[in-house]
Amino acid sequence: MKAQEYVLDNCKSFEPKHIFECGQCFRWDKEIDGSYTGIFGNNVLNVSKNNNSIIFKGMCEKDIKETCIKYFDLNRDYEKIKLELSKIDDNLKTSIKYGNGIRILNQDLWETIISFIISANNNIPRIKGIINRISQKYGKEIVYNNKSYYTFPTPEELSKASVEDLRNVGLGFRDIRVYKTTQKIYNKEFDLEKLQQEKETNVIREKLLTLDGVGPKVADCIILFSTLKRFDVFPIDVWVRRVMNELYIKNEDETEVNKKEIEQLAREKYGNLAGIAQQYLFFWKRETA
Image 1 (cartoon, helix red, strand yellow):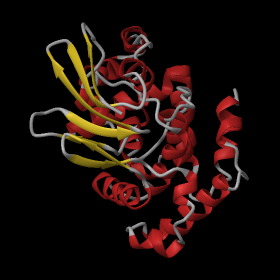
Image 2: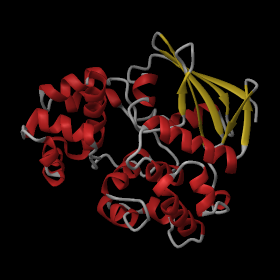
Image 3: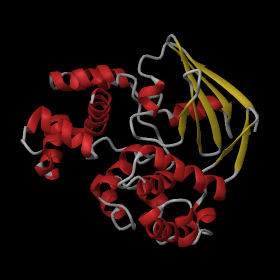
């Protein structure tokens, strides 16, 4: 692999902070100069913004332009999406102003499954630490700018880790869940390619729920943030429950707000763009908390 660069000019819906800090990914880190460096697949990229230009540079397995278009969903018209969502109500319109540069990434399905199993009852710094340790131990090294980065291990590479090995990288109670799901996928008892071809979101969700460590929220995150890319899901965590309660449901005790009530409300209000609406609302609530 050799270093490459790609500059995207006049891009309106692309803000690195909004993309990399909205909870959808765990392998991007902010640099001293404000840019972000991350690793996905067999690629290491640095992303920075200069006025309305986005500069991508790094080590890419294939052509950097094609890689960025696919991963950053650059062929999708987010300006049109924001315009449509802004018409729904003033609350969503306000949230979009806070996260106007969000784009939902096309992340590898396998990596997204394991990453969000790790995310259960966890915080982002700890999730990132665990994933980095797993990658250092079982992934491959890529050197960029005299620094070592490590790819997320393939099912075959991670299948070599025992439950104890996984415990030793800090997985806690998730160790057995990651182990069982890895073995199931590695042994072809769960077909990722077949899942990728499935058209019905509910069928995809039901299949994901058969994996150890995958509950409804984790399943919805996988469906939204991976190459499955379905916008009709609405992952609900503490921030999303809080914002939906404050804006619409108005229950005095937010912990009593029913998940199905929120899902129904999201379906009615946001329809097939519920997942993108969720990201704007989540980012807004967390940034202004």
